[in-house]
Length: 155
Image 1 (tube, helix red, strand yellow):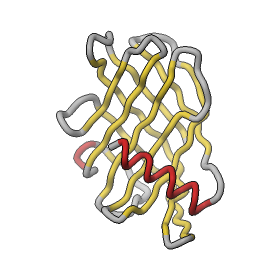
Image 2 (tube, rainbow, N blue to C red; image 1 turned 45 degrees about the horizontal axis):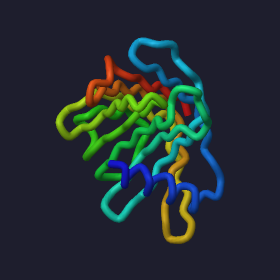
Image 3 (tube, helix red, strand yellow; image 1 turned 60 degrees about the horizontal axis):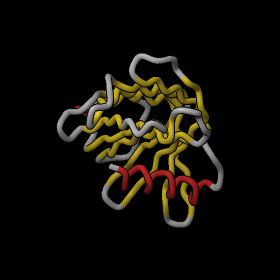
Image 4 (cartoon, rainbow, N blue to C red; image 1 turned 90 degrees about the vertical axis):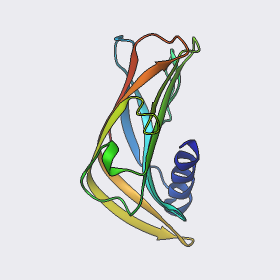
């Protein structure tokens, strides 16, 4: 899934030449939500499409917050859950090394992505998608990390 996230961000950035900025809130183990800037994009890949969200700003307690879904066809304006995607994956990693994940494989965590507007842009033989909508992701603690983490984003 990390590959899908990387591909979507790279293709979108190269095809569009500009950022699609969003606002992401991250909360860990019932703590307060911390707000950070993020990048949201969709991209067509040789094996399908991907929609991804990644934290671009900094937070004092969070090192990484990212999430992506793989789709069998181009993204469209609708709501996506686990049954609607080929794959999904996300992670939150804290500065204290607590790791939280979401993955369709193994049914770890959950998510809902509601795309309200999807606009394709093609360049350099690639198609990227400017996307607008919301996402809510619940990630499960791993290797002793307590509780859950949540990502909520508006883009």
